[in-house]
Image (cartoon, rainbow over all chains, first blue to last red; front, top):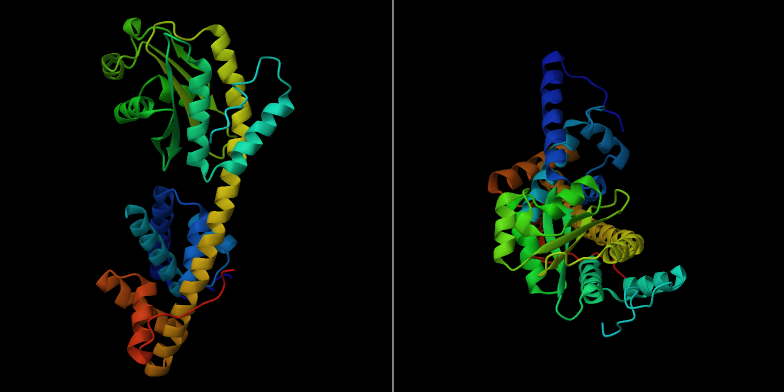
Length: 83
Length: 254
């Protein structure tokens, strides 16, 4: 699932930064991709594992709603890890 | 496990297939990786121990980029592993990093790893043998052997442990795969359960607010992050506030 980019250049920079942050967070967490994808799917995520992989390698943009769910999944999995 | 017929207990010159069978049995009998490694440590320690030279064995694994003492033949070995991991450096961690066997025949004359060596000597250790397990990138682990005697490990001991580590590595990779698969299966079934609850709550929010699915997700995510509550739990409370249902059964389990 590829997002058609409709925002202006400023929004693109913002989306790039947000994506970069998510990529860093994912690397720091040392999580297997499958674990993150499964959790993200479990909270209502729609994109497949390959697209999530591409997003986290900063090679693909996702729709804003999916970005929100990826961020939520990363955050909640870190809580689980801290327990 | 009361069965002591491991590869290390067998006489020399044993056919490889028999040792492999013994490891295969151990894989099937172990509840998890930790269980398997604990038995491995016990076998290694008892094989090398002779009267007057008791050998302790621990296994350190890299988890979340940090070394962790996960299994040991006895409490002493576990404590020694943790001691080394606490310092973040020592013969076993060096062996792990270099992926080669490392023997410290006499800690008293060892110049490397100063603070760790002093602490280990205080714990009564005189020689250390560290043999990394080659897990082909699936994980990183090292077998740590401690003796209270200087020169506590012979050249023969080293080749015995190396052969043992080589055979054990295959079994560990197998047990890791099994564990990962069953974990993935549990995660998927939890995801199905959670997605059902969230989808229902999203539908309810859409109906109540006459909004799109995306908008409904925004509302739910905002409620979750401002209150620091998991999305799934917020969704469950949305449903119970509507219908009073506390549990939404999802039958994906067998």
